[in-house]
Length: 261
Image (cartoon, rainbow, N blue to C red; front, side, top):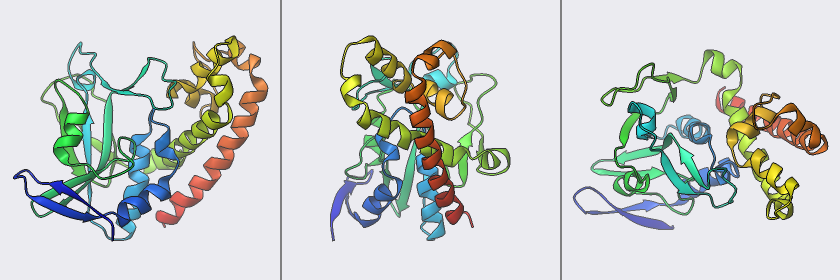
Protein backbone atom coordinates (compact mmCIF):
# COMPACT_ATOMS: atom_id res chain seq x y z
CA UNK A 1 0.00 0.00 0.00
CA UNK A 2 1.40 3.38 -1.01
CA UNK A 3 0.89 6.20 1.47
CA UNK A 4 1.87 9.77 2.13
CA UNK A 5 2.34 11.70 5.33
CA UNK A 6 0.55 14.97 6.01
CA UNK A 7 0.47 17.01 9.19
CA UNK A 8 -2.56 18.33 11.02
CA UNK A 9 -2.76 21.78 12.62
CA UNK A 10 -0.95 20.50 15.71
CA UNK A 11 1.91 19.14 13.61
CA UNK A 12 0.97 15.48 14.13
CA UNK A 13 1.66 13.07 11.31
CA UNK A 14 -1.17 11.49 9.32
CA UNK A 15 -0.63 8.55 6.99
CA UNK A 16 -3.06 8.22 4.09
CA UNK A 17 -3.64 5.56 1.46
CA UNK A 18 -2.89 6.71 -2.11
CA UNK A 19 -5.23 4.23 -3.82
CA UNK A 20 -8.33 6.44 -3.94
CA UNK A 21 -6.31 9.49 -4.96
CA UNK A 22 -4.83 7.78 -8.01
CA UNK A 23 -8.08 6.06 -8.93
CA UNK A 24 -9.94 9.38 -9.05
CA UNK A 25 -7.06 10.91 -10.97
CA UNK A 26 -7.33 8.18 -13.61
CA UNK A 27 -11.12 8.48 -13.82
CA UNK A 28 -11.06 12.21 -14.60
CA UNK A 29 -7.96 12.11 -16.85
CA UNK A 30 -7.09 14.16 -18.90
CA UNK A 31 -9.43 16.97 -17.86
CA UNK A 32 -7.15 18.35 -15.13
CA UNK A 33 -4.24 18.68 -17.57
CA UNK A 34 -5.84 21.75 -19.15
CA UNK A 35 -5.64 24.20 -16.28
CA UNK A 36 -7.42 27.21 -17.74
CA UNK A 37 -10.72 26.43 -16.04
CA UNK A 38 -13.52 23.98 -15.22
CA UNK A 39 -12.06 23.02 -11.85
CA UNK A 40 -15.62 22.98 -10.49
CA UNK A 41 -16.66 20.42 -13.10
CA UNK A 42 -13.65 18.18 -12.48
CA UNK A 43 -14.25 18.30 -8.74
CA UNK A 44 -17.98 17.69 -9.05
CA UNK A 45 -17.44 14.67 -11.28
CA UNK A 46 -15.06 13.20 -8.69
CA UNK A 47 -17.54 14.12 -5.96
CA UNK A 48 -20.27 12.15 -7.72
CA UNK A 49 -18.01 9.08 -7.72
CA UNK A 50 -17.29 9.49 -4.02
CA UNK A 51 -20.96 10.02 -3.21
CA UNK A 52 -21.96 6.89 -5.13
CA UNK A 53 -19.48 4.94 -3.00
CA UNK A 54 -20.60 6.52 0.26
CA UNK A 55 -17.24 8.21 0.91
CA UNK A 56 -17.64 11.31 3.07
CA UNK A 57 -16.09 14.48 1.71
CA UNK A 58 -16.69 18.17 1.18
CA UNK A 59 -15.51 20.86 -1.20
CA UNK A 60 -13.12 23.67 -0.39
CA UNK A 61 -13.39 26.92 -2.33
CA UNK A 62 -10.81 29.68 -2.45
CA UNK A 63 -11.88 33.08 -3.78
CA UNK A 64 -9.46 35.75 -4.95
CA UNK A 65 -10.08 39.40 -3.97
CA UNK A 66 -11.18 40.10 -7.54
CA UNK A 67 -14.28 38.04 -6.76
CA UNK A 68 -15.41 39.70 -3.54
CA UNK A 69 -13.54 43.00 -2.94
CA UNK A 70 -14.75 46.12 -4.70
CA UNK A 71 -12.21 47.45 -7.24
CA UNK A 72 -9.77 44.61 -6.45
CA UNK A 73 -8.04 42.94 -9.39
CA UNK A 74 -5.89 40.35 -7.62
CA UNK A 75 -6.49 36.81 -8.89
CA UNK A 76 -4.93 33.45 -8.20
CA UNK A 77 -1.90 33.39 -10.50
CA UNK A 78 0.02 30.28 -11.48
CA UNK A 79 2.42 29.35 -14.29
CA UNK A 80 0.80 27.56 -17.22
CA UNK A 81 2.67 24.26 -17.68
CA UNK A 82 1.31 23.87 -21.21
CA UNK A 83 2.36 26.93 -21.62
CA UNK A 84 0.09 29.12 -23.72
CA UNK A 85 -2.01 31.16 -21.27
CA UNK A 86 -2.93 34.43 -22.97
CA UNK A 87 -1.82 36.50 -19.95
CA UNK A 88 1.42 34.56 -19.43
CA UNK A 89 0.21 33.00 -16.19
CA UNK A 90 -3.02 31.19 -15.42
CA UNK A 91 -5.41 33.62 -13.73
CA UNK A 92 -8.27 32.23 -11.63
CA UNK A 93 -10.90 34.22 -9.80
CA UNK A 94 -11.62 31.15 -7.72
CA UNK A 95 -10.51 27.57 -7.30
CA UNK A 96 -12.15 24.49 -5.78
CA UNK A 97 -10.92 21.08 -4.65
CA UNK A 98 -12.04 17.99 -2.73
CA UNK A 99 -11.74 18.25 1.05
CA UNK A 100 -11.56 15.31 3.46
CA UNK A 101 -11.63 15.21 7.26
CA UNK A 102 -10.70 12.34 9.54
CA UNK A 103 -10.94 13.44 13.15
CA UNK A 104 -8.35 16.19 13.66
CA UNK A 105 -6.81 15.49 10.25
CA UNK A 106 -7.71 17.12 6.96
CA UNK A 107 -6.33 16.84 3.45
CA UNK A 108 -7.16 17.94 -0.07
CA UNK A 109 -7.28 16.26 -3.47
CA UNK A 110 -6.51 18.83 -6.16
CA UNK A 111 -5.36 17.26 -9.41
CA UNK A 112 -5.15 20.64 -11.15
CA UNK A 113 -2.61 21.95 -8.63
CA UNK A 114 -0.81 18.70 -7.72
CA UNK A 115 -1.59 15.47 -9.53
CA UNK A 116 1.09 13.54 -7.63
CA UNK A 117 -0.13 13.64 -4.04
CA UNK A 118 -2.77 15.05 -1.68
CA UNK A 119 -2.15 18.46 -0.13
CA UNK A 120 -2.48 19.69 3.43
CA UNK A 121 -4.99 22.47 4.08
CA UNK A 122 -2.35 25.03 5.03
CA UNK A 123 -0.22 24.24 1.98
CA UNK A 124 -3.21 24.46 -0.34
CA UNK A 125 -4.31 27.87 0.94
CA UNK A 126 -0.74 29.20 0.90
CA UNK A 127 -0.31 27.87 -2.63
CA UNK A 128 -3.08 30.15 -3.87
CA UNK A 129 -0.61 33.00 -3.28
CA UNK A 130 -3.19 35.60 -2.29
CA UNK A 131 -2.78 38.57 0.01
CA UNK A 132 -6.42 38.20 1.04
CA UNK A 133 -8.12 34.88 0.38
CA UNK A 134 -11.67 33.90 1.21
CA UNK A 135 -11.86 30.15 1.92
CA UNK A 136 -15.13 28.28 2.37
CA UNK A 137 -15.65 24.58 3.10
CA UNK A 138 -19.11 23.51 1.94
CA UNK A 139 -21.20 20.39 1.43
CA UNK A 140 -20.20 18.30 -1.57
CA UNK A 141 -23.63 18.58 -3.19
CA UNK A 142 -23.00 22.27 -3.92
CA UNK A 143 -22.04 22.49 -7.59
CA UNK A 144 -21.23 26.16 -8.18
CA UNK A 145 -21.69 29.57 -6.57
CA UNK A 146 -23.97 32.42 -7.51
CA UNK A 147 -22.17 35.53 -8.72
CA UNK A 148 -22.31 38.35 -6.20
CA UNK A 149 -24.60 41.23 -7.07
CA UNK A 150 -22.42 43.46 -4.91
CA UNK A 151 -18.84 42.84 -3.83
CA UNK A 152 -18.64 42.83 -0.02
CA UNK A 153 -15.51 41.56 1.75
CA UNK A 154 -17.32 39.66 4.53
CA UNK A 155 -20.06 38.14 2.39
CA UNK A 156 -20.67 34.38 2.29
CA UNK A 157 -21.11 32.93 -1.16
CA UNK A 158 -24.35 31.13 -1.98
CA UNK A 159 -24.28 27.86 -3.90
CA UNK A 160 -26.60 25.83 -6.08
CA UNK A 161 -26.82 22.13 -6.84
CA UNK A 162 -26.32 20.36 -10.13
CA UNK A 163 -29.97 20.22 -11.12
CA UNK A 164 -32.61 22.01 -13.18
CA UNK A 165 -31.18 24.27 -15.90
CA UNK A 166 -27.49 23.51 -15.40
CA UNK A 167 -28.19 19.78 -15.48
CA UNK A 168 -30.58 20.03 -18.42
CA UNK A 169 -28.00 22.11 -20.32
CA UNK A 170 -25.22 19.57 -19.55
CA UNK A 171 -22.87 22.03 -17.86
CA UNK A 172 -20.86 19.25 -16.23
CA UNK A 173 -20.14 17.00 -19.23
CA UNK A 174 -19.64 20.04 -21.47
CA UNK A 175 -16.96 21.38 -19.15
CA UNK A 176 -15.17 18.03 -19.02
CA UNK A 177 -15.41 17.65 -22.80
CA UNK A 178 -13.95 21.13 -23.33
CA UNK A 179 -10.91 20.34 -21.20
CA UNK A 180 -10.31 16.98 -22.86
CA UNK A 181 -10.66 18.52 -26.32
CA UNK A 182 -8.27 21.31 -25.34
CA UNK A 183 -5.65 18.75 -24.34
CA UNK A 184 -6.05 16.95 -27.65
CA UNK A 185 -5.60 20.30 -29.40
CA UNK A 186 -2.46 21.06 -27.39
CA UNK A 187 -0.95 17.67 -28.16
CA UNK A 188 -1.89 17.51 -31.85
CA UNK A 189 -0.99 21.11 -32.70
CA UNK A 190 2.11 21.36 -30.52
CA UNK A 191 4.55 21.99 -33.37
CA UNK A 192 2.52 24.97 -34.61
CA UNK A 193 1.90 26.32 -31.11
CA UNK A 194 5.63 26.35 -30.44
CA UNK A 195 6.29 28.46 -33.53
CA UNK A 196 6.16 32.21 -34.13
CA UNK A 197 4.06 32.47 -37.29
CA UNK A 198 0.70 34.22 -37.68
CA UNK A 199 -0.88 30.78 -37.57
CA UNK A 200 0.86 30.07 -34.26
CA UNK A 201 -0.41 33.36 -32.86
CA UNK A 202 -3.98 32.53 -33.86
CA UNK A 203 -3.78 29.05 -32.35
CA UNK A 204 -2.56 30.56 -29.07
CA UNK A 205 -5.50 32.96 -29.04
CA UNK A 206 -7.82 29.99 -29.36
CA UNK A 207 -6.26 27.68 -26.77
CA UNK A 208 -4.68 30.25 -24.42
CA UNK A 209 -7.98 31.50 -23.03
CA UNK A 210 -10.73 29.08 -22.07
CA UNK A 211 -13.39 31.69 -22.84
CA UNK A 212 -12.28 31.71 -26.48
CA UNK A 213 -12.08 27.93 -26.66
CA UNK A 214 -15.54 27.50 -25.12
CA UNK A 215 -16.97 30.21 -27.33
CA UNK A 216 -15.93 28.38 -30.50
CA UNK A 217 -16.52 24.76 -29.53
CA UNK A 218 -19.12 24.69 -26.75
CA UNK A 219 -21.20 27.74 -27.65
CA UNK A 220 -20.47 27.71 -31.41
CA UNK A 221 -20.38 31.48 -31.29
CA UNK A 222 -17.85 34.31 -31.69
CA UNK A 223 -16.41 37.16 -29.64
CA UNK A 224 -14.00 40.04 -30.19
CA UNK A 225 -11.01 37.67 -30.16
CA UNK A 226 -12.33 34.67 -32.05
CA UNK A 227 -14.34 36.67 -34.56
CA UNK A 228 -16.23 35.33 -37.56
CA UNK A 229 -13.23 36.28 -39.75
CA UNK A 230 -10.85 34.50 -37.36
CA UNK A 231 -12.94 31.35 -37.54
CA UNK A 232 -13.24 31.54 -41.32
CA UNK A 233 -9.43 31.53 -41.57
CA UNK A 234 -9.30 28.29 -39.59
CA UNK A 235 -12.53 26.59 -40.63
CA UNK A 236 -10.92 23.18 -41.27
CA UNK A 237 -9.19 23.23 -37.89
CA UNK A 238 -12.39 24.26 -36.11
CA UNK A 239 -14.48 21.64 -37.91
CA UNK A 240 -11.95 18.99 -36.92
CA UNK A 241 -12.03 19.87 -33.23
CA UNK A 242 -15.78 20.38 -33.12
CA UNK A 243 -16.14 16.75 -34.14
CA UNK A 244 -13.68 15.77 -31.42
CA UNK A 245 -15.53 17.92 -28.88
CA UNK A 246 -18.90 16.31 -29.63
CA UNK A 247 -17.33 12.84 -29.46
CA UNK A 248 -15.89 13.71 -26.05
CA UNK A 249 -19.17 15.27 -24.96
CA UNK A 250 -21.13 12.10 -25.73
CA UNK A 251 -18.63 10.08 -23.71
CA UNK A 252 -18.83 12.37 -20.66
CA UNK A 253 -22.63 12.54 -20.87
CA UNK A 254 -22.71 8.75 -20.53
CA UNK A 255 -20.26 8.81 -17.63
CA UNK A 256 -22.19 11.48 -15.73
CA UNK A 257 -25.54 9.79 -16.36
CA UNK A 258 -24.15 6.53 -14.97
CA UNK A 259 -23.21 8.27 -11.73
CA UNK A 260 -26.48 10.19 -11.55
CA UNK A 261 -28.81 7.22 -11.94
